[in-house]
Structures are given as structure tokens and as C-alpha cells.
Length: 463
Image (cartoon, rainbow, N blue to C red; front, top):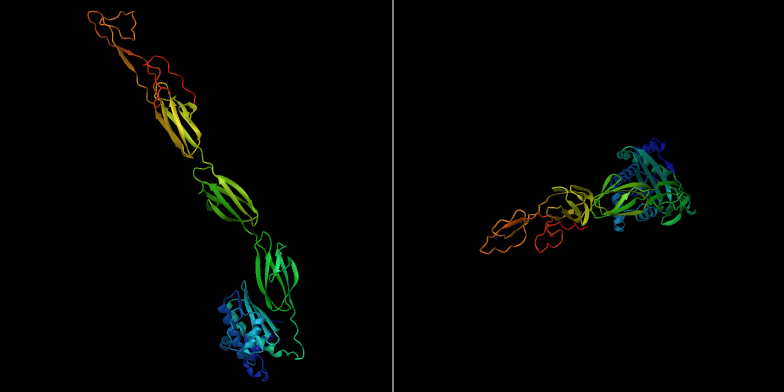
């Protein structure tokens, strides 16, 4: 191979040759055509422009017949041949045979960081072998490559002119195979070369068919697959080092009820149901789930690479609070038929999302029965004014003459004396100690039907 340097002796000779084209031997019969250089990291238009500059420089130097682009397109168009994707030596030979030239020029221009790499090769159309291989690295802006192309053209002309044609009687030598070493981090990845398994990394000394492109695929459990292609030149040794990337973990979160906000490692991730959220593998993650009226859920999850996880969270409603006061105070409170304490009463926890029954009992006052719906997380306050029970009264008749002071009044109807009598109206006021309930009668029982009687009310039933 012929290594290129900007100020090399070849460049000086090429410039002198450019100034004195008559110095090329008249008997030179070499003819060639140039395929558009393959752009790797640069645009197709930029690669085509640099190819045109190389072609123009070869024409100006002289001594070699160069097929112009327009003539190439016309000839190949007549043969219905498409140049798109023609980068291999086989394709170059086929194009050369159609154009009737002795050599084809092909290559690529790649960019790695801020460095451009130019690789040029000439292929003998008759034998299909690579006769010359040139490369150069250039660091700078891409427009600086325009000045590099005439230097490369001069070195190509010199190399072609200096080469001795092989004897016709000698069979063409087989090109030297290329070889490659493949290393991955971590090791142990399966390697497929042109879809054929060739072993596990690290690999070294794997032979490659020269002068063609090869596809390499790497696979390792828990890591993202890696695929690449490259062109292997005859006799070249390549070393490929690839760091493999871990596969992400995935998390699905559902909750009952849905609509809860999900936070992953302190970042908002959306609301439930949350489907296939991507997580960094091989580490613990903090998962927080919040929904108004429900207790928050805070948990951690360790995720392995490439694994999928599902969290299904039944949310628990926040307890309601209840405060009951009455006027007057001291009324006994029954909650859902369960006897509690007298008012004022404060309950720190009441079952949420539930309809509750409340009863208040106080002697001398009407019983109160009511209901309320406890909302999760809210504080409910019931302020109840009790109503006293009304005083009962009845009327009887009595004789006209007043009764002696020593005689006690009788709760009965007396007959009138002979000769006419008067009707005595006796108002018996009975201090009732038993009272009618507010909604359900005498403390839940049917009131007596034989009339009002004096005495204590029945005891309060146990709830």
C-alpha cells in the first residue's frame, strides 16, 4: 500500500506532472473510470463533488484516458444499469466491462470526529484484483478536501504508470484475506459474521473475504444487540472494540381506583394505568403513588436489565373524622347501632366512602335519628339542637262544693249531688318523666294506649 502525506515526494511529482503533461509516455494506453466515492459521515452531494474534483484532476494530469461522468451515465443508461449502491469490487468490475476500461477507481470518504479519512483503490477490470490502494487522513474543514484531491490524483497516475503489467502466462494471484479481532465489553457476546455464527467475544484472527463489505452482529443476554458493516481490504487487519449497552427495564403500574399520580425516582411519570415506563437497569427505583382521598403508597423496586415488572396497587381510602355536639350536651350517641359516648364527641377515624346512621338520646328531649356520608380524608361536624318533649294534660269533673283540704284529689269522674251540682274542672298536671321519641315513639316502642300514666320511662335498649 502507498501511504499518503500532504507534502510527500509523490505530491511534488504530481504537481510537476500537472504542469508538463507532455512528459507522460505516448504509448500509455491505460483507461479508467471513477465510481462516486462512498460518503460515510458526509452527505452524498459532498461525496459526489469531491469525486468530480478527483476526476477533473486526473484529466488535467493526462497520460490516462478518463471516462467523463456524462459519458458513464449515457453508456450505463443504455444498458439499464443503476450505479446506486455500487461499492464492491464485483460491481466495479461489471461497470468497467460495460464502459470498456482497463481499471476502475472506487473508495470512500469517512469522518470520525473532526478527522476525514480518504480511502482510494484501483481495480483491474480483467482480473478483478485491487492493483493500488491509497489512503490519507485530513483534519480540518471539509472544503479543505478539495485541495487534497489533485494530490491524490497525481499519486494515482504515478502508481499506475510505475506498475508493471503481470505476465500474460501467469494466472492472477488470489487476494490475501483480511482478518479481524472483535472485543466487547463485557465479553461473552455471540458473534455472527455475514449471518453465520463464528464464536464468542473476544475473537481474534477471524479471516474475511477481501475486497467486500461484511456484516457483524453481536448479541448478549441483558444487552442491546449491536450491528455494524465494514469493507475489508485484502491483507488488512482490523480490530473492532464495542461497548455493549444494557437493555432497559420496563414497569407497568395499575391502581384501584385508577387515575393516581405516579412518581419514579422523584420524576413525574404520569397517571395509572401507566404502561411500560422505561427504567435504568441494575438499580433500585423509588415508586410513589398518590390519589386525593387515599393513603399514598411509597415503595422501592430493584430492576434487572431487559426485565418487565408490573405493580398492581389497591389504594386504601383515608379515614374520615367526625365531631358531634348537641345543645344541650350529654346526649348519648349511637353510630351504626353501636353505643359510643355522650356529646360532645370527637372520632378521629370513621370508615370512609360509607353511609353512617347517627342517633342521639337524652331524657326529656326528642330522639334524633339522622344519616351522613363519610368522604375519605374529610372532617365532618354535626351540631344538633335537641327539642324538649311537650307536657301532657287531661281534664275531669268535680262537685260544686269544695273538697276538704285533707281529701286528696281523685283522678276520676264524680257523680253530681241531688238538687243539682256543679261541674268541677280539675286540671291534673302530671310531671311526665317518660317522653315520646322524635321519630320512633317511646324509645322505639309503641306508646301506651290506656292514657298517660305517671312513672319512669322504660330503659334505653342496648344497641
